[in-house]
Amino acid sequence: MRILFISHTMPGVFGPLAEYFAAQSGNDVVFAAEYSRRSLELPGVRRLRVRKTRERRAATVSGGRREDAARELQRAFLRGDAMHESLLRLRDDGFDPDIIVTSSGMGVSMLTREVFPGNFLAAYLDWVAVPRDLCAGETPYQRAVQLLTQSKLVVDADYLFTLSQGQRQQYPPFIADHIDILPPCVDTLFFSPAAARPFEHEGQVYSRSGEVLVFSVRSADFPRNAPLWAAMHMLLMQRPQAHIFLLCGGRNVWAALLPGWEALPECSRSRIHLLDFIDDDSYRDLLCAASLFAMLEPPSPFFSCMLEAMSCGAALVLPASGILREVLTHEGCVCLCEGSSLEDMTAAVLGLLEQPARLRAMQQEGRALMEKNYCRQQHLPVQAELLLNAWRRWCSRKND
Image (cartoon, rainbow, N blue to C red; front, top):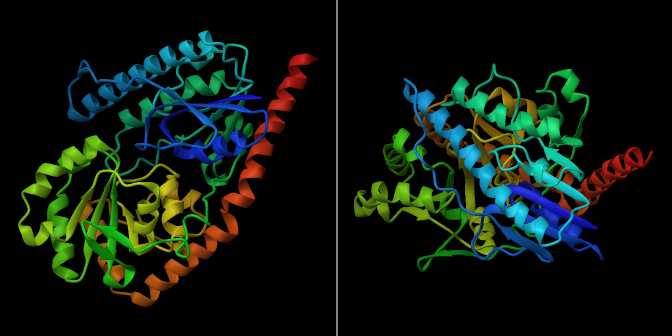
């Protein structure tokens, strides 16, 4: 069987499923993505490289937020065009997939159906659909762009799925009734305190007993729009034993953060560590050393790092939103910050650190929850069978 995975990033949500199918005898699995972790390899999976898009300045309309939305729409078309080129090359090389699994966000699959018009197309609906619940900093224009890029694939796809009942309920009934749930999962054997080594960085060893705080920054726009360094300084003043690790979502994010970090006094730079890229083992070791893992920007309903952090026993701190409340059904394991500002997030982190009993309970309950409900070894075969059953039904209808 030939299976094609399409996403903006590799491994992303599809990495475990791609690796699972590649391990099955007779399967030929290709993963098309613009970005991936440096030196990443998924056993048995062939990587289809996609031209990295270079943003051209979009025509703007009045109002900065509208300009952001216009640029995002342009980015989506550029991503779709770059993926289209790569898929044409793959098709011309003779790869004719039985199953295509693609993300609906970021515009990457805008032209997939034009390349493979008669193939089974399964679409992961990664954007939520309810306009009443915008994330902090998000505008109606940006939400409209997100839904616009998703809508084309909803029409093109033969099978729709998402990761939770909460996400599915975001859609109107005439769409929700046709969406399956493929629950996310995490490798609880790898992302485990039992498997971790001491985390070493620049010759120093860090552990949870020394209060390691990990913050995820995924957008290069974030450091320009938030008083990041003032918030980090306040944390250091309040927690004199703490070390902060800023985990960047890409080289561009690291580059955007670097000037501000370099401007810090030496006493702060020695306790704030800016991480561009670390290998998988070191990433796991860092999460296992962390007291908590905080996402400074509102996440989409699921980032794999959220599950990985909890599996490693780190308490999870997230900006609150109605979206997350409807998706995360075990809020006791997560600290949801009610405010939308960076100061609010910092206060939530400090408040949690000042309650060691609650912090330990969240760490233990999060790990137990991952082992019980999100274990990769248990859930991957279920995910694969749901997808294969949908493909079999499609084949049956096609042959009738």
